[in-house]
Amino acid sequence: MSNSSSIRHFLLLALADTRQLQLLHFCLLLGISLAALLGNGLIISAVACGHHLHTPMFFFLLNLALSDLGMICTTVPKAMHNSLWDTRDISYEGCAAQLFFFVFFMSLEVSLLTVMCYDRYVSICKPLHYGTLLGSRACAQMAAAAWASAFLYALLHTANTFSLPLCHGNALGQFFCEIPQILKLSCSKSYLRELGLIMVGASLGFGCFLFIVFSYVQIFRAVLRIPSEQGQRKAFSTCLPHLVVVSLFFSTGTFAYLKPPSISSPSLDLALSVLYSVVPPALNPLIYSLRNQELKAGVESLMTGWFHKH
Image (tube, rainbow, N blue to C red; front, side, top):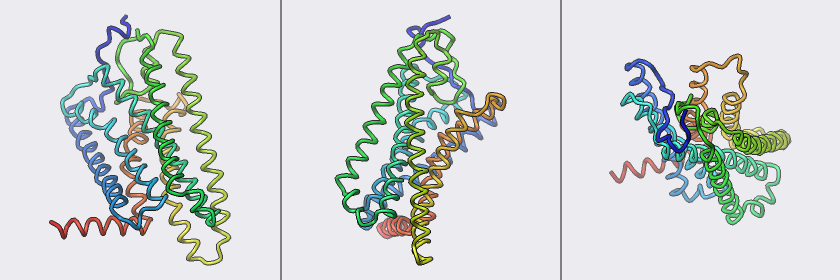
């Protein structure tokens, strides 16, 4: 038996048992992280450098790309290190930092996807008020509120989780530090306080999801009233990437945390955790750039300019 004051490190879940599989996982994670860094880096550079992309939609997309980069950098490097060097260790402070940044970027992702949905709703359903409701000041305030609320929420969770006494060892059933795994090590009834915080967070997340669903019902009704087929296609092309990203993010995360215990297994849990924490940040740039012609043109002009310089 040990308490949290004597714990100096945690043991993360190994991605594989054999050396060959560990190296394979290292290569896969390296490929995914490089794709995420390249894709999100291109979006950030294209939006920052392309004056025609200085609109609310692309401003929020830039923030989402920053969030995706943060998410990848929170979980993947340590998993790659452990796979390459055949270790499972993470320091107590490293685990606290990883949990903080994971909660921070997950919360930020939910907030930004909700704000981006509001942007699409105003653009299509209230186009005459777009400049008023989504001026540069309003956009900056919404983005700042998303970052600040995610920071405070993550700080509250991390401080609360790591104030709990831990007496059930130091082995975590996950390849990164997350709240449910730390709570399993707790031997105090005060973990109910943290569960209460999780329920509040889950309720807020569900509220965001309902807002997105309600907004898209209104958006699709408005799009179907557009007389020209070309106008409908253009409206759908701006909404479809966001809808795909929202569906991927919410479906994988919800299933990972709310799946029935009867179908739970270590390999399935591991696959789902990779699916909701690693895959979306890598896929989001691809989803947005494939369907959005303005963004595609911005990325192409950025790359053309770079090649000409070099």
